[in-house]
Image 1 (tube, helix red, strand yellow):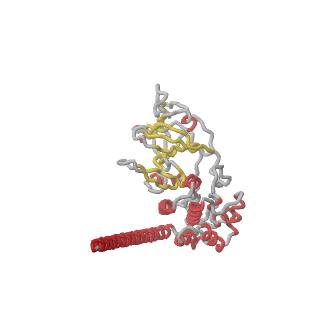
Image 2 (tube, rainbow, N blue to C red; image 1 turned 90 degrees about the vertical axis):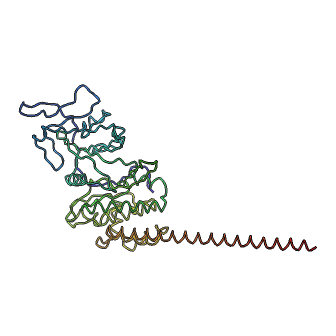
Amino acid sequence: MHNNQQNPIQPICNTGNPQQFHNPQINFVNNNQLPTFIQQPQNPHFNQLVFQQGLHHIGQNINQQQLIHQKIHFPLFLKDIEKQDLLTISGIEYKKLKLLGKGSYGSVYMIQNKQTLEFYALKIQTSIQKEEVEILSRLKQKTFKNLVNTIEFQKHPETNEYFLLMEYCENSLQNIIDQKPIDHKEARYIIKQIANGIKELHEEKIIHRDLKPENILVFVKKDQNSNMTQNIYKICDFGLSSTKDLAKTLQCGTAHYMPPEQIKHQNNLLGYDQSVDIWAFGTVIYELFTQKVMFMKSNRQEVYEEILKITQKQIDEKIQTDLKMLDQQYVKLVQKMILIEPSQRITIDQVLIELKQQSTNIATYNVNKENIIKAKKTMQKTEKHFRRKQGEKLELTASTEQFSY
């Protein structure tokens, strides 16, 4: 089982050195051009800069003529956000509530839309890989059910910092696993949600490469007409994701969840594909039911060695032994996912088909079980009624006999 201490084994794909923070200066150029920055005056709480020159969206340049008739609002960036409570992003006012996390990449804040009162996460990132820019730009164009949705993703033209406005998720699967054993019915629901998220990624030709409980978040969906809520499990953190599936030269991911080919890849030019996510998914399911990682050693190198040395027979026996509390269909599904040979692993479409079949079997079993229980209750009721009638007959006979005296 995980503890609350920091996991010493972290993703090992270096995203680059953070850039030094600095506050953009307000300056004006000659009369034939627009001012580079215009600071909102006389209101210390109106936290925004209006950029009117040199601005570009990710993957799209905006020329000066377009900007003459357009104002685009950004929050003040990281150095300034730490001091401010109100932010304006793309013309919408937000209230900064609290810092959710901070690291070498930058910071993540919880913010609230002042009008709708909805919560969001605002990530200010000091460095970012080119491929992550491409992926986030593409994902921003769509809405996904089981991926953390990106609302805004843009780059500050002066500081080169990126800001990422996302759905706010209240919890992570890692925290849920750490807290207590998960009910099997809830676990089946979680597995189906994760599978849907992986399918959404793979349909976009994206390989996640770092799927683990920490990167699966819980979005709480609230019913507007009642107090009912529903947990939606969403995959996040596409910093190590890739759209390519051949000749990758970087070994990225977190050791416990990496398949052998991903570990080996640092030493050769062999490629890997979407099946790395299937292996990782299988190890997440294992952890969901056992509350422990499948390959646990004291350090990253030992984890690598165990995954590279273990045989398929040993993997199958470990799954069979540690998941013996599950129906055999689930055990076999996990075994089909954690296969040493990538080409033999089940695909995400096949995973979803099997999950649907198992849900049907469970539903059929539950209906049959319910019918058996109903039939049993009916028989008990009939038998009780019969006995009562027999008792009344006996009592009547006894009364008649008494009168004969």
